[in-house]
Length: 337
Image 1 (spheres, rainbow, N blue to C red):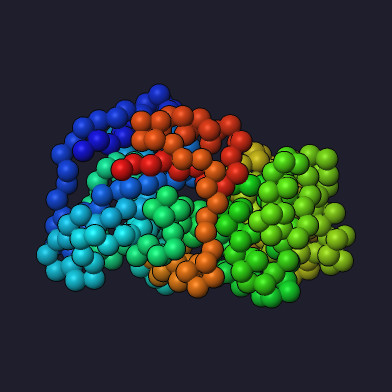
Image 2: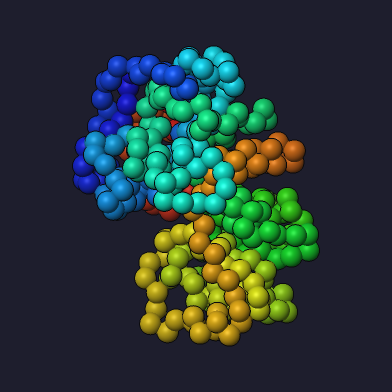
């Protein structure tokens, strides 16, 4: 089989396409022929060597993939060859609260990921692909989809009539917009591109703000709602946190996910967060049980991921370059087989 390996922290140039024998499924395991993968910003960080001590070399990168079961090992009765499946980001986090042990095995970081034609998974780490999704679409769910689900549905507990603010047009943000609308919430969406803002409205955003022409978008969001938003899905990180604090209502929540916007300014508004009894909720993907809940939810509502562009398996470096450019709207996918 063909497989991409990251040989060291040398960026995209350290990615090598290698030949390896097809692995065999042992007891309790399943061999999956991967059909598609999608990229997350975390994958770009990993390729650049920015995933710290949890990163091993050589490493098969990328966490999010979907495919078809090729063979099952002894004792596996829950799946059969031909079943369409997606793999969980954390293979050992079946359910319940997160812990160091449950979060240790993270695909494409501490263990090999899915940028390969075949991979063996523990049977318990797989979830059936929703029938209404293609393999490309299903490959968007394990990290980006589940992170947004955890932020909006599980931890955010968004109810009809509430207001959610999303940032930008990456995979997590668009999923968050879709899930917030699915929950009956109002959505304020930000972007630096007027062309992308048009697409955000088509996706269901009730209000849009261009954060380049409206740099105090947090203040504006608070004015628009009269009291502030119930939830901000914060993908920018410390660089956008100040405006997120301004946008959030007294007692509201900031789901803290990303690191896209760089370092914080010196005039941090953390005292305002304290005074308004806001909650800063860290979000790191979710469990296999959560992934199943996500699949059940989008199956019931017919929600489909937004796919920006599909690259061939031999165009992986181009796919990473496209992600680094920031030009994408939704998920960047790779067709494997």
